Length: 112
View 1 (cartoon, one colour):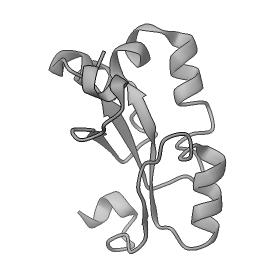
View 2 (cartoon, rainbow, N blue to C red):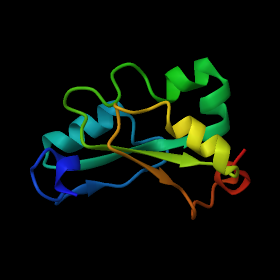
View 3 (cartoon, helix red, strand yellow):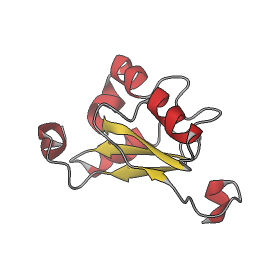
View 4 (cartoon, rainbow, N blue to C red):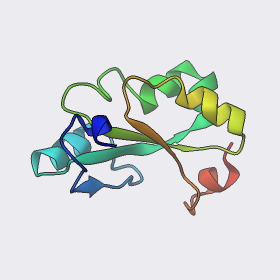
């Protein structure tokens, strides 16, 4: 519960993940205007796990840093072990992970 949000209670304004819009700069802008919880763009779990260049592009060194918390990382995946391994690469830079189960994008439908 509340410990995840730094003792500040529950988030009141959430910026849901948006395709090609939830990157760090947009999250900073949203937080400037009162957003209290943000999501990353959807991260492809297998690529995040296997491809360092993709990993750095999807979640750079400033993502999840000062001013970018609380933050939830959203993944698409079709294999539980791959999803778990990819998600375990992020702490302590995220507060939670989310598995996208309803995106109509082709990559989310395939999950690989």
